[in-house]
Amino acid sequence: MSQLFDLTGKTAVAIGGNSVLGASIAKGLAEHGAKIAIVGRNLEKANVVVQEIEQNGGESKAFQADVSSRESLERVAKEIEEWSGGFDIILNAPGKNSATPFFELEMEEWDDIMDVNLKGLVVACQIFAKRMIEQKRKGSIINISSVSSTTPLSKVFTYSVSKAGVNSVTQFLAREFAPYGIRVNAIIPGFFPAEQNRKILSEERIESIMNHTPMKRFGNPDELKGAAVWLSSEQASSFVTGTLIRVDGGFGSMTI
Image (cartoon, rainbow, N blue to C red; front, side, top):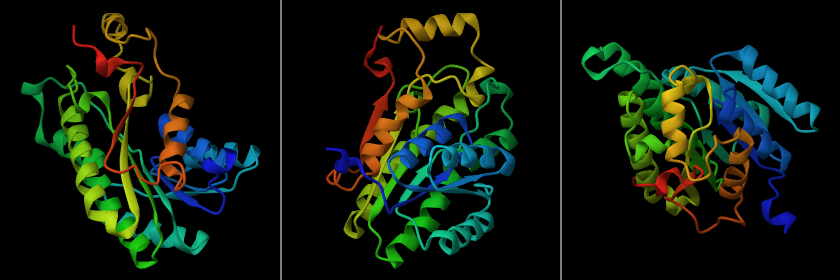
């Protein structure tokens, strides 16, 4: 059974791997043998994740890139190829949020969030998946969505719209890449206190979240590892593509 989830010999590119959730998932992939490229705008934070992976016996390297820039992503793809020879797993985990009320929303802010959460993901898939196809490397693309992608949450209008787009992109690309042996899936995390949502977690909002979460607690970032390792494994999830996997403590099952 352990071989079912063995990622030895695989290279995973964790875009946004220096974030709370992205880092935890990246560590989980490393624990199962994958070589990890941590990609983020903040190289210092990315190096911290690399050090933690290496201290646990894994192999990793930090790379600097801005997902809102195609040129930046093309450069980092070449750098990772030079380091590892290619890649088999792509984790798209960048995220940006804002609680700006709808009528106060400026299009500059809209564009900024969309550039990171949706456009950056699309461009990353164009660049990295194309290289995987050219190298005839089968693999897995894992996009990080949100519970707000299916039922929009109050106070995070642009974020919710961007994550709904992530779901659509995931299912479209699953069909597009299937002939090449590349599977595309998304993980829908529930409420995991992270950088982009801490600022809007008032006592009132926390109470509301708990009332809509059957397990009555927040998620721990390490609880995303299992789904990511499963989706990364060719053996364990070889017939799984185009799926939206909820890891949300039951949040998505609640109606009233």
